[in-house]
Image 1 (cartoon, rainbow, N blue to C red):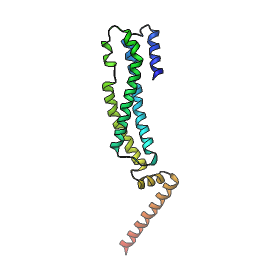
Image 2: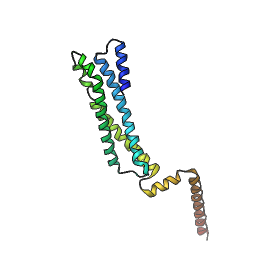
Image 3: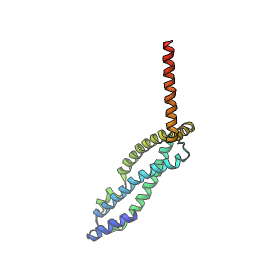
Image 4: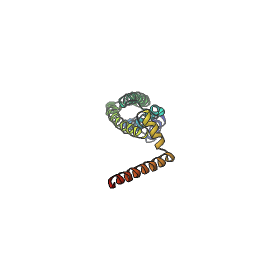
Length: 173
């Protein structure tokens, strides 16, 4: 994020408008982009770390952990942003145009809701792929391998056909 802030500063400095609200606005865009990427990282990391043993906690607990991580990331990102724009802010005579860009504000709330939706989808997919309890995790672990899945399908087909033949013989007798 530091590099992207520096790039924006250099770009606006080259144009001769480093000390302007436009520079702060561009840097705020960088902050929003970085924070949006953080949302994806939080969800992915949470599922990777928590799901390593194959079992997931209750979805609400996972949501709470992700919300805490996102809140910490917000505070860190805003701190870096405010540190980066402080010299620009001090160089301006009128700072009223900067007020909408001094925090993530509504963007944070929107990203928080998007994270919860993304987490819910990822949690459901993870549950479907691996199972919720140990029995489902073992079953899914074996059935996700073609070497095990194809014989299981063949055995199931043989049992269904044998049952069907047995039912037909029973009806005919």
